[in-house]
Image (cartoon, rainbow, N blue to C red):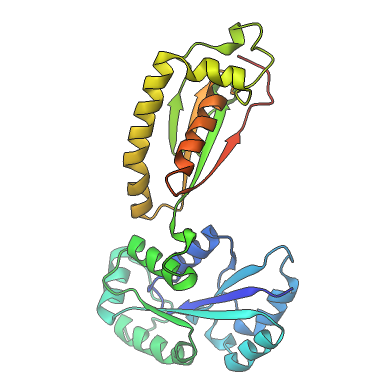
Length: 287
């Protein structure tokens, strides 16, 4: 099985963790602090279900860097795609970041942080020379760096830059969805459960959907909900959020919330964002 391997490496404090999170958010299996000599074995033993894997390699495993050029060549000969994503930053930015976080540079001994940074530059210089992509994170915040990683790895026109949106219907009697970012309570709407012909149906059935969406209060609610999401979604996307979960709840999660979630999904689909829907409690009995 041919895989896409990304080696995330570079200077300590320059953004490797951000790069790893970005790739993990987009389907990569990521392992931290992997000695390069273990790379072929890592690929061999990793679950075959992962066709995209990433390994963070840094100065903590310097003694295990080995002959990385031969290592990468071996992996490529086995049919795998290899990208090397190298992060760096100015001395000034690195010193400031360590000062702000009060963390200790992994190579600091008695000579101070500037000397440790210079020693790390020399140590990692070989990997920088063979890097597929070099990202200088000087003067960037985490959201700007995240977007630069996305563009570098997936291209400027890739859908991976777009936030993933999940619309979830649920029943309050079964608890709030733990992953929800925005929660809307639709229990103020008339309940199809109390209409004998609609009770055995769900919000996926046209009769229930028409009953719920046809209510004047529901029409006003849908309009206002669309307005607030039209305002919020681009701003969450611009802020760098990878996933947004919008939850709609009724009593049992079978009728009102389901019909509204279906309606909302169809609306968001037309806005260009990647969206799916989950009806968490549709199979449960209740009002």
